[in-house]
Length: 478
Image 1 (cartoon, one colour):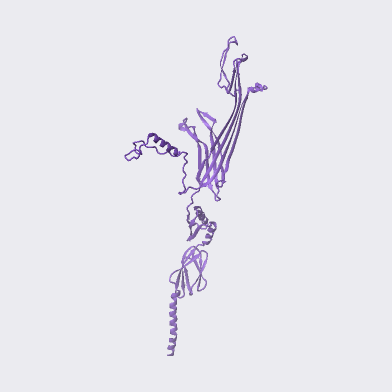
Image 2: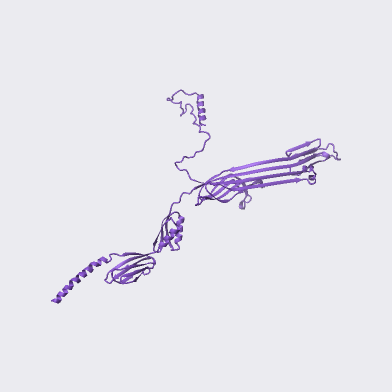
């Protein structure tokens, strides 16, 4: 009986302990899989609530484990991906862990922040791919960020959005062309004609200026001076002509001094966008015959070549607020003095002055990119040997032509950054030196006349009065 009472005494505490253990199991037991995120190359320790009997992983290449003690489990992230870890307790309870191993993106984020400060670039990873998200200032920044991370991983997905590009600024280029051309010509020449002086008709000339030519000479056999006549034809009397019939002597003299002055001035204004080329041409085209070959051999076609004042420039706005420009001004004129004649066609030459330069200016600044000076002197002298060396009189047997030409080309460039007018700004209109004429008065009896119809008020003005009113209206408009 005592033995039975002793068993009953220990049975109640054991029953209570088993009930408490059964009630505590749901408290630490797992209701669902637990999520664990680990960076590649790092480790995580799991503290289990009771002694562990067995551990299993679904992918050892992604997550590996090492039991440190009966209740501590060390996890190693070996590869990017996901794996499931199952832990069994000695009591029979098991827990599931979903382990996601991600790449270490912090060094990449730091690299992007230092390389592109002020840009909104977000980095995320999915397995072996890296995704770039956010908004950047330009497409060039997005491309550079993608190229920067391609050395880390092969798969880089560029989801960056570039902000809309701002409106290109307009650049106005004010150019002034100034060309001065001075010509000076000095000519001196003498032709002596004898129509029978000293019983000898003849001509003495240096051949620089056209001398008279004998057109009719008559002689008598046997020769006799009396009654013999000679005729000379003057093709060019030059600018001084003298003839003494009593002396049978004539002379033509060329003594001229010429001075010429030519000025060409153009002020083209060109407007273009940043980085876009603009061109300007004031002049014309002249025809050039071109001989064809092949099946159309011998045929002549005409091509037109441009000449005049040409300007081509390409502006680029820098970060410093200056303008870099590639400027090519050109001035060409038709030069008939160097023209050639071929198969009956006269092909003129071109006198061209061309400048090509790269400059950098601030808005409103000016720069002279061309100061070309062309100074030429041409001197032609002709003389008659022997006679030209006679003192004092030798000057009559010499002819001289001296030509001097001097041309200067000046190109002044002034760039400006301009903006278009807003809708509220007053619009610019062309200035009219005279006002617009008033509408003409309608004749009597025509529709629109103020004197027609039954409802016309007042007497009809006389025609003379209507002409005076019209004259006054036109005068006021002017």
